[in-house]
Image (tube, rainbow, N blue to C red; front, side, top):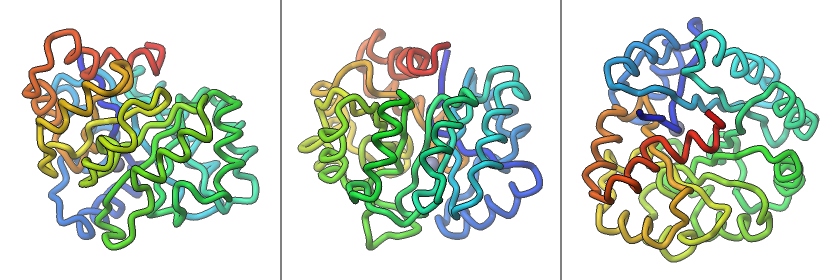
Length: 267
Ligand SMILES: [Zn+2]
């Protein structure tokens, strides 16, 4: 059993354009064409049972369409794709849209501070975090370095830790093992915080030191780390192999590969 907690899919009519644009920015050859059907086909090939599909509203006003589409993923995929919702921080109805996401049954929300132009610990974000905390919605952030904004880090581990401490009941996943290419800071600032979660997306491709990964895992709550690939930007087979190669023992390995995600998603 494998659950990939960090995947991107797009509606068919925009997939080619969206993936093409992101491939040009990142310089990465995509593993899927971004459509639901190709994602499901590649999941079959890799033995991935469930993928969590993360969406981003890059402009205010896109939320309703994105969240309605995310809510339909479960049905059209026979339960194999689970959609996270999105709100743009500058959207005038951001807080009520978060409530609608909960009503739609979405498992969580994804923020991308670089594409949505905010820094994780800006106080203008706090009303949204408050609502998420009260709703009990899980939240994932793109964290650390990003090719879209390489010189300006919007979610560094130190700032992420400030938010996690300010909202102790909010379950926050800082993607890319807490902060892409900032893993020394992850160990120093984020490892051990009870409401902080990590996915493993891009750790393999970006050359995270396995011994540092093991150290962070040993300091962190065992239930709070999930397999992630960032598919189509990393082949999920590569991500899963990287986790297995950490040689954490069967129980810890299985928790990361699917058990922890299953508990969060209630599957
Ligand atoms: Zn991603």
